[in-house]
Length: 475
Image (cartoon, rainbow, N blue to C red; front, side, top):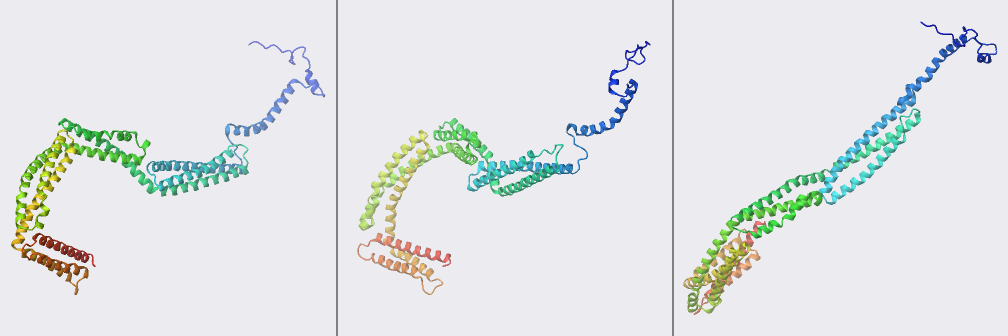
């Protein structure tokens, strides 16, 4: 081990000198170096507790931590923090409730345009302004106080607690208003949700209806029928399908729902007509044949009217046949018109103009019905006149029976008849007697007699109906 050489200032070194600082610092005299070091160590040990005591609060307050023993200020800080947490929870709950209710309002606005819906939307906007107001007050209360400050005073913490508690109460009150408002939206929201629930199925039904109509039309065309009118009706629905595909967001829920239902209805009508078209064509063919046969038969019958009229002229007065003079010419003209319309109907059928063919056949049928009635009228007139000429008493008895039956009904349950019923019945009796009087003489007007008795029976029937209606009503 090598010995350490003596230092120049060491007391043990040869020629050591006295420290000039020690001479200047101590007027008593120089202090030996070893004694000076001992004094310095002693002073350092004595100061150590004081340094520790000064350093501890700083160490525990550093890094955001707080002092352990704050007294009343710490208690107020804790209460203010609790109020802050409660207000934050109230703010979050109100915000959540407002977001949920906004979804309901948007649902109603998308579906319903009624005054009640518009009023609900306006009320929600007013509530929104109130929510913004209390939310702003809450945020101001939070920003105004830093509860993490080390030097937070008790009075400041107490004031913060009060403001935050008031903000929480205001938030809770508005939330209760929001809940009451939401409860009142039940009917409107239910109606809106019902329409929304109907929307998707309605749009799908419309699409499926259009597809079914298109398929039915293709099948008809494959059978050789053109069905141009049905194709045009189906093509007219294409723009409506485009709007359905664009969605309710662009066109509105009520409008889209109405459009979907209308498209489905019209597409179904096209489908039904397309599927029935072969049957319709066969029916038109059958009617063409049937009406042509009937027109030929009426041509034959119209030729028999003239002999009937000749007999009427020979045996009865002019009044009995004068109104039938036009029947032969009218019947012939009607048949000619019917045959012309039949040709037009055949041409329409060949060109597959189904509505035109149907309309023309209806015209033919009306012409033939009119002809049939007029031709039948001549033969019926002769038959009735023959019957009354042979035995007028049968017609008289029939009419008198109707009058007596009505008189019995009018007197049923009464001592005297109601004048409203008795007067027309009495007039009918007198009218029948006058009609019977026309049969006297050399050339009686049998047709006048028949029309009079028929008119009397109609009058009596109206009286009977009136009596029964009044009694049925409890008069």
